[in-house]
Length: 440
Image (cartoon, rainbow, N blue to C red; front, side, top):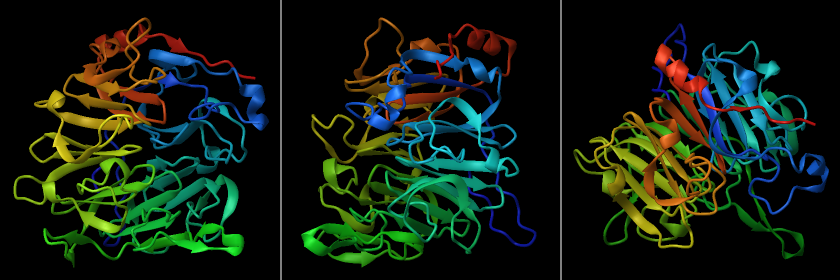
């Protein structure tokens, strides 16, 4: 995530996007309609055989040497975004709910610019399961894709919104955003957090899971259709008392499928939402309806510097550079109920980390490192005729000598921005295979 912009005194300073520049690489599953499903839905059947598993890093042939500033996907997403050096937003992948922002619901095989945002400079974006948020340099947010549960913040519930539409919000400029499976989070430049969408596990942080019994004993959810401020942050004492934590100024936000993490200005971490597999880090599996302090990072010198959320897990990099993990990547094995140091990465300086459904990829020092249990689809990047999965962190040898600026991960695919500044770096990238997807 880019550093938070200063708050506007007039004139409004522009938000800055990522400073990195490089070329896009992709590996993993590219059959966008099949990802996370047993079979392709009927209305997409024509595409059934489009897109193979890429077991090692590929360049998109169609992009030439397009300079990319950041790549975006998410642990629930079968679609992806890139932001070019000029601040243009491009999208591709699954599009059944219009989450690509092209005004239709046609699947897109290779990255394509979102024309409707052509006049906007985009600095950040986020992908939910079937929806997308994009942040402009002036701090306004555009949303598109599925809105059945109010996750676009437009004040209504509609099946699909295929064109970028500004969220209904008139507070301070937004400076960060995050998407869970069916909910969204935005943070303003003063450090206030707002949420909207599906409240099912308390992940919106408003002290409710929104459940009510509708007609015929059906359980329904009272969704938040507009950005609503998360007002209360708490800690639980050893003897079980719940106390409010005052003066929380949010600096970063990360969303898993159904849980949320924030990092505040005092380097504290709070988590809430779905408690299964220990992903909240509170040493118990219960759902939390309001942001609750994760004790481990609440000590001088032990604060957190970065946070990341996976589908059913969470990560933080401590201010001293150690990587901590809690939750589960392999849900058939033991869960980690509170933050534990990842020994395999002790001593590595972590620049960027991303999670898929159950895989993890990390850019650290001169290396790219990944791990994840079977089944995998190439998102670990180990290459053809190599082991497909790994329970321990492994260096991605197919990227040897390639400096990774940033990593992103979808449900089962990985995206990398590879630095291409020197002649040697460009030469290395030219040697990688090109991916030229077939189209219908």
